[in-house]
Image (cartoon, rainbow, N blue to C red; front, side, top):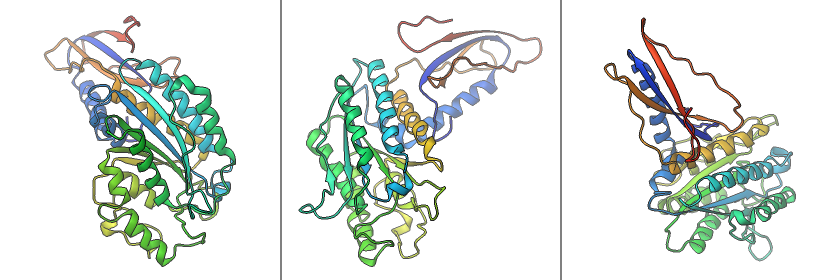
Length: 353
């Protein structure tokens, strides 16, 4: 599993009884586990105690409504991606029923003045998967929401903070922000960043205790989905989105946008940017990272039994996407060794094979 794993939807345990050493396999499995721990999205949902100390997960979609989406997301992949993600979340909600509850809201943002524009649209309510059809309809409503004049990240981040605070004032649940944007900060309806917009970014957004720090202080796991459409001329620079989501240092293409140490905010990042050059691949990326994180956080299983040179029994976990009909496992054994393997699929009602 690499850092942005796309296929981890089903978890199984493979038990091995062997005469001889399987140490190489054990090291491989350990490396995968280490990668899972370092994934910021998985780490965020794990640290909040999902399924353990926290019994609820609040997922907020915030979708860009700017007119530039007609160029960067002409096929409305943000809408189809949201629908597929809702389907994945529903499967996970069914699977983890009784361990934690999941509710969802789908909001939008653009910018402008509250008196004449709709900088942040929060009219869609928080719903559970008992209202799955209503959630799908809420997502479909964004297909025509691509006429906004602005892309003001202050509205996206500030609106998300307010939405979470109102929904969970005691901050007892885990929180995940799914943020779709095409990456062009624009609060003035201009084609390039102005000095005042740069001041907004380095001030309101990225300064100490600014909006980005406030998002992180609330332990809101942030999954940013970049709608860059690299096939177009002059694709947008998503480095600022990367800095907001991950906390990593970035190098914006605009030399006038200088972030302190290349970072936005002073608190550690709580998520990451996931970007596809081909928007058609957005759906698989989105569904994969979300389900992967929930499985790592919510699946309760015995720890793997390491393979050792002197042991004759070991286990390790691996992950398969729901589209996998079959798979083949290969094992490298020392000469004159033998092995018996058994597979323990996920779920309490599935028998080992």
